[in-house]
Image (cartoon, rainbow over all chains, first blue to last red; front, top):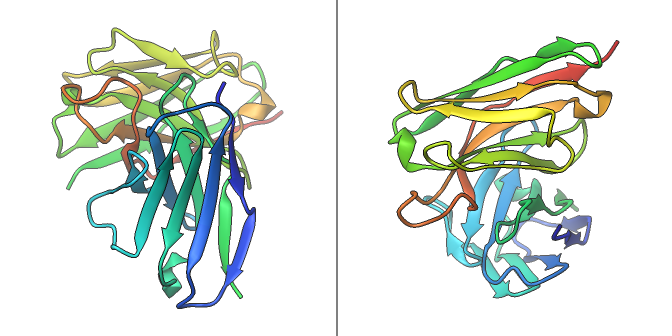
Length: 107
Length: 125
């Protein structure tokens, strides 16, 4: 099983600041990596797939990068609606696996 | 707008069974692989099972293999998860989800762009 490790567990930032979230895979997953945003009481929302392609309707302030085992989700300037939990997911190998999540909270 | 609606959750005793359903609309159902993902109380996301576009291929997490069965009915635009021999650790919110890419562009493994709202399964005596 590919283990996905996200860091940090919690990120405390102010609106307007840049957020950098990391996701590491225990073995290469090439570019088959997705990022999701989840707010309390809601289903996860797809932000990025293929490591760097934004899903439909996702603002340009969200960007993804990386390949192999190291991936990054960057939010260029945090808006109030961006404070949430973010998960990475690999879909290169069975079973599909998610990271433990990074909570982006208001400082 | 594409939509998936989960149902069938409830309270069940350990060792019991439950069947979850997911109704899909506003997309070509048999063009996509489908999945179940769960989230325990206060926990992260865990992929449970997936099925390809015509039901010929099914994949399961080790934690549910042999106890859960995923199936789909393309004529009814519906996805199901039959859960047997339930354990307390199966307590979670269960979501159905679809692949972002069609079967012509992707296999069963993919990112998920449409999710149901979730249905709560509680396993407790």
